[in-house]
Length: 401
Ligand code: SF4
Image 1 (cartoon, rainbow, N blue to C red):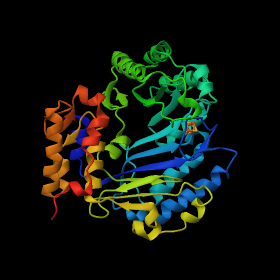
Image 2: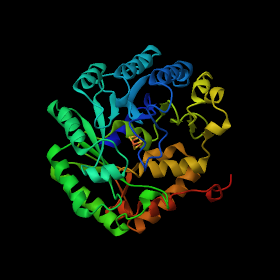
Image 3: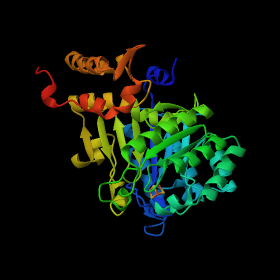
Image 4: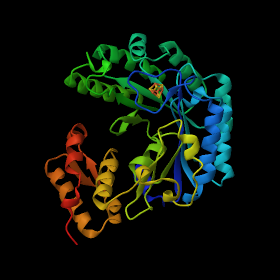
């Protein structure tokens, strides 16, 4: 049985939690996350006290007590005192969340922020996965992107992780201004030597007119770059399991599958997003403020229902056509695809409409239907935007009652 089929058959009794840390060594030129240079805002100790308050005030909205995964992201969580990360784990346990040895606990670390001591602390606390914001081994490209670390910092971090045989993911950023295919090839050569168990690719995305939007590789070169990444990674048994993620079999990101497979997740901290598939008729999304000034007062609002603490501009109960669109788009990011059974949450006429569109994509050889799943074909992987456009449903597409 493949990985996501196993995920789908697991009863929805477990929750995934994302914890946001908004501190960074620097503000990278291409980044649009809600983060700040560490000295720009109040101290992490105060921020985490507010975050603990949020956990205490709102955890009762979740019936699930067992944690499927926990993800410390940012920002740069490895920049703050590891004791704050450990305290977060304790607070989650104190309010009744169960963390098991099988719970995937990931922390994002940026090169130049990890030490042997902090690594010991993370491991003792039960953190069992590390996500390394390496980006590239090319110092000039790193500098131009506004990163403070250099390739040697990355090598030191990878050495620490490899010498202890730890589970980690490597973030590879490509299609940077002035980057050539042979520069990317050098990155890949070194990645093959380190042999990470997991790798996430990020094709640089910046708005038109942004300083980093100029002198980028042409679109056809970007496609060639991605195909080079895919073929090189096979040499170290890293296979694509999602449109931009690769892993050794068994090292797929459990946390990300919660996002892709219509499972509940709770985002705590500044700007974090959450989703409860059971709230409302077809699920509810809700999100925290992006304002670091507003966050401390926002966490004072508590309750057993989302509407107790979030006004209408911070929550969205999904309508049928929106839930149909989200479900198709998210499942079809993974190469295991969309299980037929996942459609059963919708009324019969909605299922029929989705199936009609899926069959149209099969006719065009962008999807295939097998093993009770709809899956992308190799051509579909290259044309995923076209697939998503044809699986975007509008209210007027739905049969009237
Ligand atoms: S380190 Fe990561 S999160 Fe922080 S500014 Fe740079 S890209 Fe954004």
